[in-house]
Image 1 (cartoon, rainbow, N blue to C red):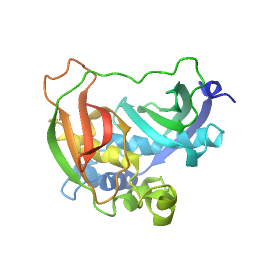
Image 2: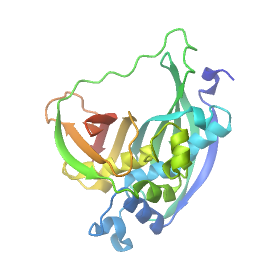
Image 3: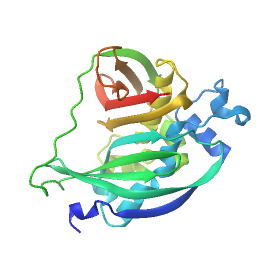
Image 4: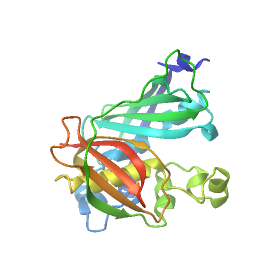
Length: 268
């Protein structure tokens, strides 16, 4: 198939099922503390919205299995999530997947693979390096109003963060096996991009005056790998610095180098 033939490709429907224990494990894997009882105690459990990203991740695997790309030749380039309502403490519901768009950056192709359910919509943007140049005019990147950023918080990532997060479902070897990680070009096991995003989403709630379970939308581009044991420096846009109403802009860096860019977050 040509790259553009994947647009609209249906990936089927699967049943997502989880228990309270699964939601608590996810919260712990993105940094929930023992004293944050709504996240770690089933009595009044609140499910973090970014937990949805673990439930919908199968759509990217399904696109690969259908022949859209080889996992070893692809990168998770960006992620977005829109919530339609709060996730229940434990439930089962259907998630449907499809390829929403194929974009040409010139050098690379980008597949926007969507997971849809009654509770959320998530877009997993997969970059295929060297697969661009298939359209007459390569798409230009989305341009946002430039923002001034201010420091908000720092998050220390414990060394065991990646091996804990992989228990939520993403068991790729580069997150646990040093040999596999080095073969992929990294100095050691790297943190899952979705773990970084989930950690940041939780950390942003307090400085924005909300609770982590009140997130209604988040997006970001994965600009560089993050290693367990690193410190995330999170900054948000200076209030009033933007005219954009699509959410609060944020950026994340490690040792002065950007790891998440083009970030947006909304809380209700």
